[in-house]
Amino acid sequence: MALYRRKDGHFDEEEVEEEEEEKKKEKKKKKKNKKKNKTKKKTKRTTSMMSLIGFDG
Image 1 (tube, rainbow, N blue to C red):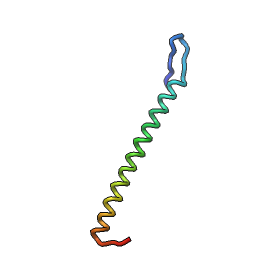
Image 2 (tube, rainbow, N blue to C red):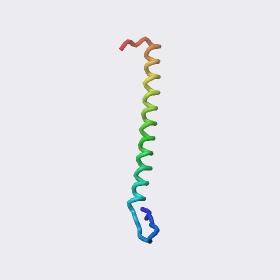
Image 3 (cartoon, rainbow, N blue to C red):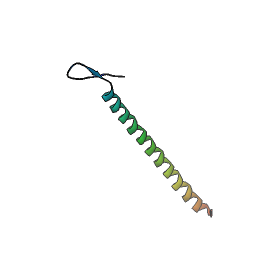
């Protein structure tokens, strides 16, 4: 973990932690969006294939 040094010479860890947590949350959101996009593509493809075959669900 990196330390954040204030102007008066003291060290703060909290501000650095908040920035790291925000970056982690953004990465998780991106991963979730990627997963959603993949599932949407799969469902569209499978439904179109089912309609070509003549599958009535």
